[in-house]
Amino acid sequence: MKLHAGRNLTVASLLVLAAAATTVGVVTFDATNTASNTTGGQRFDQAVGLDYAKQVLSDASTFVWNTFNQPSPADRKPVDAVTLVVEDIGGVAFTSGNGIHLSAQYVGGYSGDVKTEVTGVLYHEVVHVWQWGLQDYGAHPGIFEGIADYVRLKAGYAPGHWVQPGQGDRWDQGYDVTARFLDYCDSLQPGFVAQLNAKLKDGYSEDYFVQILGKDVKQLWQDYKAKYGG
Image 1 (cartoon, rainbow, N blue to C red):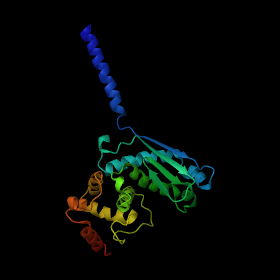
Image 2: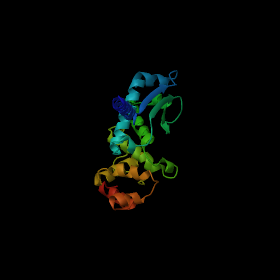
Image 3: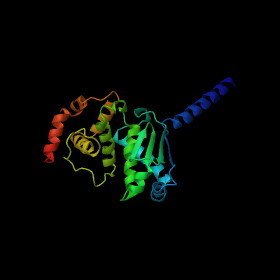
Image 4: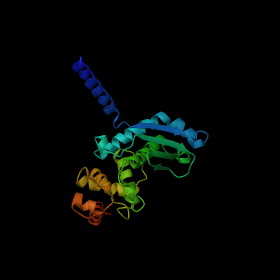
């Protein structure tokens, strides 16, 4: 009986551990609209909707993990929830921690396909939830915004008004300019952006370009401009 009881205890313990293991890395996604009484908030409800937005948060997170080569939750930032709030604020959107805030005013004033635009914006913002190195954002915003737009680009949500490859004044100009440059760097060595993001966990350094690609970023920018006649 003691052996049998011990066996039952062991099995029970294993079941508990297995149940716990299934919860490791589980991320929840939620969205709310606090601006439903505004034109933009109503347009969001009609053209996008909360259910679709939550699905985008999930799909975008998976896309980011794949882009960053993070198959295991242990590789990622410790985030267990990603939230979206549609608010009556200016601007386009911003992310604080794991919370994304979307401007209902922007949604209301957008003249094109608003569902596609919101999807692209959410992909960009989801990157900020998951990317490493944001402790250095204040000093080097261009690289972090560039990585976010790079993911949006690779996901197929780059809007038509973005710069073309080779355009821009500085590699760290940010957003679409830096996204196009990072796309070039990734073409030289597939997985470059994933490696760059991983290194940013320890802080920002231009030397990462040398470590990964064997050239400093100034030379890479010159090569990039030359390739596209910029």
